[in-house]
Each structure stands twice: as C-alpha cells, then as structure tokens.
Image (cartoon, rainbow, N blue to C red):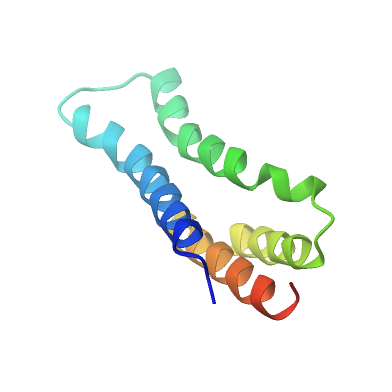
Length: 99
C-alpha cells in the first residue's frame, strides 16, 4: 500500500510540473515573445521534470531503474503529461511489486 505522504508528494510534483508549463503561457498570452524567450518557455518544464527524475539515475533500486527506463521510452514517444503519468504509475507499480 502506498504511503499517503508519498502519494501527496507525487501529486504535488505533477501539479507543479503542469503549472510551470501552463503558467507562463497564461501570464504571457497577450505578449509577443522573441525566439530566446520562446525557447526558455519550452525548455523550463523539461528542466523541472529532469530535476524530479534525476535521482533515479543513481538509485540502486531495481524498481526505480526500471521505472526510469519506462519513463525515458515514454518521453521519446509522447508529450509531457502522458510521460509524467506513465512515469509516476510505473514507479508506483514497480515499487509495489519489486520493492
């Protein structure tokens, strides 16, 4: 069974990632952005996601390493929201069954 603190952390991290993606567009929707500002707006959410999953690269847990692999495959094929959902779900399921 998943710990409530862990579940809350996962939900909050996903929410912050989503809000960083949409927040900038909502705040700046009536402005014309230059090429540099547009590149920053598109790269920032990816940076947030990487900072969340980066510790899994050094994990010794087989479940975390497998979940990381699943997330990376999803990231190569899907947009951000499905990737985040697949990553969170795969981590939860693999940690439950593998430990």
